[in-house]
Image (cartoon, rainbow, N blue to C red; front, side, top):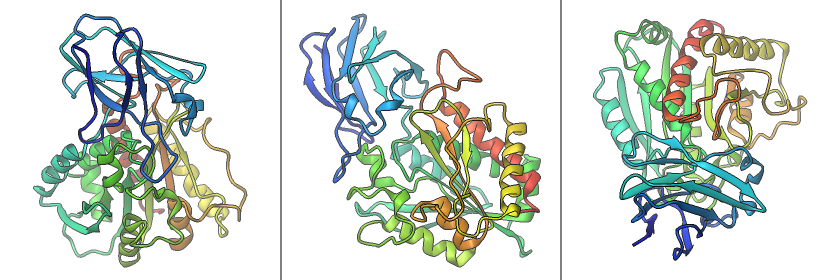
Length: 376
């Protein structure tokens, strides 16, 4: 008997029709209090060896429908290894084709990073002598907002480097990237992490949006707030995640900030800077270009030809983290974007862009920072 379930951590789907395995009709649920939707994650059981066609009927109304052409859904039978599925998009409907080899198969927009895995990440990290774990406060749903302070413990004056991920919870590649960053910073045998920690303290927020992550949202928190449009005027009532992080940043100062995201449409890894901020200068432009060049050297998966249009000075939206932080702290502040699709320049036919490659790019970000740490 065919069954589909999504009543689990990060799950999202609504079943419209399940009678015919070649015409399984589904809809993605909207984020609570919002019209955003695109993230899906569910389990299909009872279809071992049966050709199935899963039809997401409301794909055409998704937040970034321009991202569907060329996209392939991901699936797993063990929730560890994720592979791509044949996927078509036509007339506003996303068709996913598969023949399950096991009794159960999990299907998702991208490899999920559940709050359970987040808990495991925090538990593992806090066992390191380099880490102090603190809870900045609670989300609207009552979840902890975790901060990892990574330091070598010395009293020397150092740079303050912030890295955060998953303001948009459906961009799960961002926390996979953070897993790579955290693992490398805590590797005492890694010469780059040792050298960086002599010069910098790191403040890491692996998941800025625990509520949206657990609820299976694409872009918003529990009340429907897009956190990356809250930085100029956050509140504990609407966006405590941003309010609390912002207040702690004011205590530590910020010399470098990387905000990690995913992009639905562009099949590239790229960085968006804060060029539109009022006090943008040639010096800051040179810092941004130098970091990008260093990251391109560190990782062939990163490129600089494709990305978002560059804003004219003075036109930046200061409700966005990268812009607000750059303006507030006069620092190198950037947004790292990774694809939901595969990368055009370095494709992987089986996995596409994947958790493993996201983590590897995170590690490469530290290589790039090491070459620039004295200049940020």
